[in-house]
Amino acid sequence: MKLRGLYAITDSQLLAGKFLSYVEAALEGGVTLLQYRDKSSDEARRLREAEALRDLCERYKTQLIINDDAELAARLNVGVHLGQTDGPLSPTRALLGSKAIIGSTCHAQLELAEQAAKEGASYVAFGRFFNSNTKPGAPSCSLDLLDEAKRTLHLPICAIGGITLDNAAPLVAHGVDLLAVVHGLFGADSTAEVTRRARAFNELLKV
Ligand SMILES: Cc1ncc(COP(=O)(O)OP(=O)(O)O)c(N)n1
Ligand SMILES: Cc1ncsc1CCOP(=O)(O)O
Ligand SMILES: [Mg+2]
Image 1 (cartoon, rainbow, N blue to C red):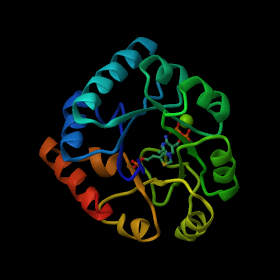
Image 2: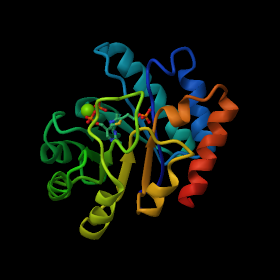
Image 3: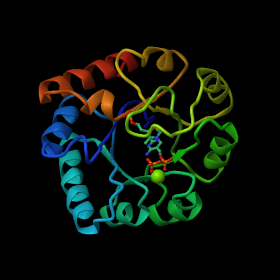
């Protein structure tokens, strides 16, 4: 199955008090990948929330991805997203098995993506493309890099960083398969608006 569509990413602060209702609203509108991103060290809460998301994702046939934490992903039998300092890809592939979805942060560097592809990544993520409230310090990436990535890589390409319904179209035009979004999706002021945004992202991607 080719990975293509909306990649929703959770944010503990943004979703405080409305975590599952907002995630479910997004799944209702259509989510290809859902990433559980929680930078806290509260292991018990992380396990509890990740299990709740796994159950929700099973109901909606959405693939759950855990950010940073291959051990938690292995425990729940779901995918993982690894940044450049989150541990090596090859042993993670061995741990999770050949079918697991494993994503790799490649910032704005094609060489990192080529390396990730060799080591068994399922998709590569470039960004940030726009100003991001969630991660303002992430290195920025240009649309030109996407053209080159499209020519040289044979993996689904994910874009991240400040993506909204108003700025996503050029990313799609430059070949992005997965639009990874936090604020542009979950920054909505109602569950109905989250669902509407999810649907609209999918329409942009024609999925
Ligand atoms: C889909 C996707 N792309 C990039 C990232 C960023 O990963 P990383 O560089 O490890 O930064 P943190 O998200 O862990 O702060 C991501 N999480 N997801
Ligand atoms: C995790 C991450 N990595 C690069 S930008 C970013 C944050 C994406 O969040 P938003 O869609 O709110 O900019
Ligand atoms: Mg990380």
